[in-house]
Length: 424
Image (cartoon, rainbow, N blue to C red):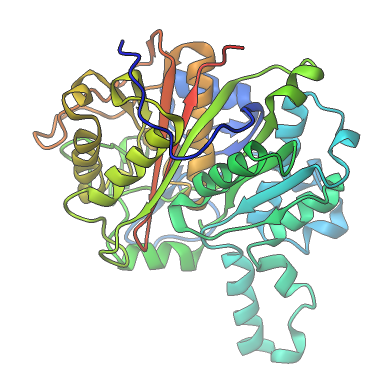
């Protein structure tokens, strides 16, 4: 492996590590259940149970199963929160527990929260509109706004842990979590805080959410085989499968983590972001925006392309995204693209939209920590335009140092994170 370095785009910073992961997904609750199911290639996708989909063209989704908000929140608080907030709070609690940090150490201005959502409280908004038309504006709940606006997930988490540092939320579509984690990485690196609780949450499996994406012809119609519907990079892919959940990291300054003898999953070393400047929903056909994003992450870390050996792709299972992401990887890595392993965990989780980047960054970190790559399941029919190594169908042990996570969203917003296997 080459040790040549790209020039860094900024000066030396404090080192930032991942010490906790919280996952609420169609694959399960917490790190252990999610990671086990991912390595075994199990799909969390099935027929929608939350509402009647008999009149919908797409009838499948990645629903969170067995989730009880009362495991994380008091009953009086649950009714004030859209499910996306509930998922975010639950994932944050799971991340804090996973980090083995005393919650009292999160109090004060050296801990911040940055948790976004691509859509926010779509269920709460839908129900409130129905209330207005059926019962009149006087019957709208006083909790409507705080149950639905995007920054309330971060706000509630901040209150829960008395974290008085930066309190932020973003809404960059399917790149939301990646941007949350990347921006938080930089806040810790520059010394503004010691700890950031960072990621995203989403609950779009609703009548309005599914209707919108169905009208765009973005969703898979493989209703008879839900577990085979999400098939990134496969020649017979026909759209993505909508999903819900949350992915949250505990990012910590290295010295702070070592002082408390924390278990360290991996180090965050690079972050890139870019815009396609092309179309409100379609990816740029030349892949330039996505490539720029990956190149920026490499430059940020001072890492040469040939040093990266694994990419967790955005890999949505739509005809255009997978083709263009493959092209962008080739533009970024040149001939080395054919030596890379590239997999899409969306083949198992579905597309968690604003929470996807948190889930997929976790896959990268866990892959580095365990030295094994999760597969792309349902890869049965090679596509000549998608001709890279997609870790087909079976997880793969491997020795590698760097892993990249890609996220690309509507509006042409892109984000890439680069992680390194931890070495003091």
